[in-house]
Length: 291
Ligand SMILES: Nc1ncnc2c1ncn2[C@@H]1O[C@H](COP(=O)(O)OP(=O)(O)OP(=O)(O)O)[C@@H](O)[C@H]1O
Ligand SMILES: [Mg+2]
Image (cartoon, rainbow, N blue to C red; front, side):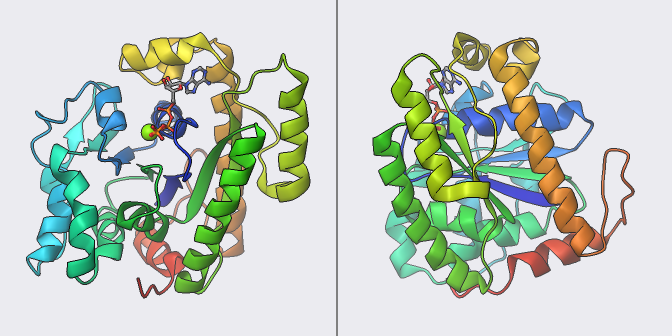
């Protein structure tokens, strides 16, 4: 199992869109996928047409399990979506209170990691959408994942915002006792103004190989897809954004493959899989945390 967190301390950069789009493409490859909504605003939950009020139980209850001294149990809180092979662990209204509770309850940083560890036999991929501010929910996303995807708008303000994210990554890397691999994804890219190309170049100069080679273009089909509660590739597979997300997924899967080769493990999609290894490897990869 692979766990990707989609995170950035800046708002409105395409985190939720990227989570939904990649999830749609993963399921189209026959991979069992779970999306986790760690944002109290519940945009990802709404994206899939589930209202926060009607979601019933979700991520919040996992934290309440831990507050009650029990291991977090995700299985009863999973919901299926209209997309085949795609499940959702929804946000509910009360999720916002977790940030306030965090100071008083021990072990709140690892709730999602523990929950995800219980699902290793159920999913090939888990994608975690995180809120745009650093708090216990974002820490949970970063602690649970084995790859971080950082959507970034190519403008100078966003580049500055990315420096904050780098400091957070350094902190997480120290707790994990190993650096967290990350990929920066230029999003909402407008090819017309020259400043876009300049900002993209600045991003590449500063972060080099960690910047994905493509861009996700501005595309009105993205907003239409979210209104239709569908990943963009299922809404309009031929649109520019769907194709760009397809390219992004290819390169992320290649990165996961090369990680697997290093550890002697191959997986999914025509590549052989060693069943039962996922749990061990996922746990090992995330390292020891003292959050
Ligand atoms: N490639 C794109 N082209 C056009 N619109 C886009 C694109 N990507 C995202 N959007 C739109 O931009 C807005 C912000 O995107 P999204 O909600 O994914 O960002 P976010 O980082 O999750 O925001 P937040 O920080 O509020 O959670 C949404 O209305 C979304 O539909
Ligand atoms: Mg969002």
